[in-house]
Length: 251
Image 1 (spheres, rainbow, N blue to C red):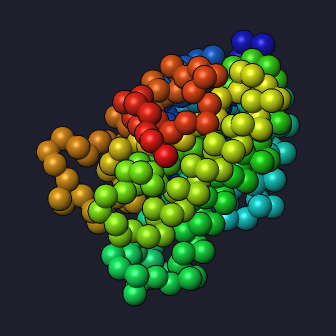
Image 2: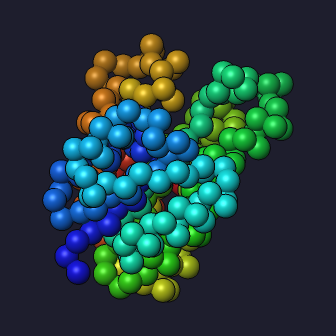
């Protein structure tokens, strides 16, 4: 089977949308792009209009396991296997709910912490739970969860950002633990976390002013870098976290 099936969760905007656009340029692939309401993304709909049946849009809410299950069923009906799954879920701030990076202990809110863990850690873990069986086909396959260097405990030298740091650390542990289990089922299934750097999206927008010159990447640049890293992965890399340049990040 030469046709490859790629699924990108969170493909309605930002980095996820850029990834969808880039993988569609490979004419040997069919792509499933998910979002909470994909039909409301004019850019996704425009891509579907351009690429026709090669792009399917599927509703998926990363905070709702039944939604993830339904998306898995739809993906399997479309194509019997997956070769690459990229989960782009990420929550750093939500002004509507009063969620923002905590600078000190007094700002910790248990409800906000729970929300961060639901989106940043539990959601990506549930994606692996429900989609991995489509990827244990024996051929090379990659599960990539967009993570962050800030989730590295050993790299934490400044403190702050409690919820985001802790939830991304939890995500990295889920990735590592799943990689160990899945390697027993398929030696060619690679499960990794990826740090995209600082990308010019809504997630980073309030925190871009102090960035050094040249550090901010456009979504299409970040997508190109990450897909390059994915292309170079081997089974020996499973369970690790890599940055956008392909360098491993210590846990």
